[in-house]
Image (tube, rainbow, N blue to C red; front, side, top):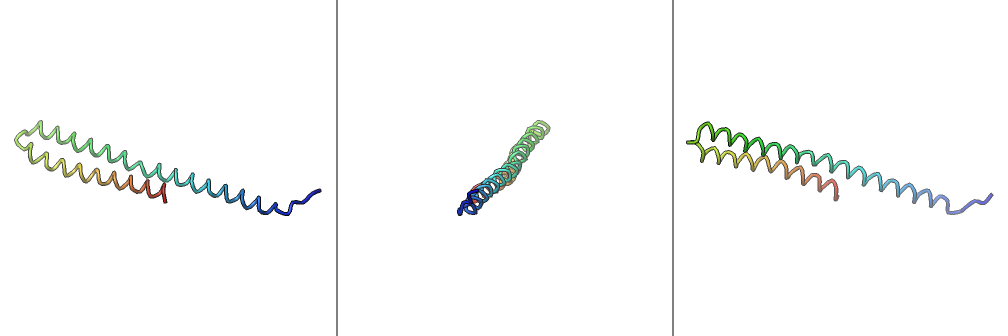
Length: 94
């Protein structure tokens, strides 16, 4: 029976390699979960402009004020989506 003097090094290298894959896999899962916020942002933008269309159809005289409020709602909703995207990139590339 032959005993290799460097066998402990191969075990350490194998363990480090597996650990690196586990960390990368966890980062990919975390970034994927963080992008769920982008779906919510898309739905929110649809709700904002859908409400704008309905309210303008009911009261065309308030079109200018309703549009101003819709743009504000769009900007706030999109900010949440960009925050989710930023978190995904931070998880993935950090």
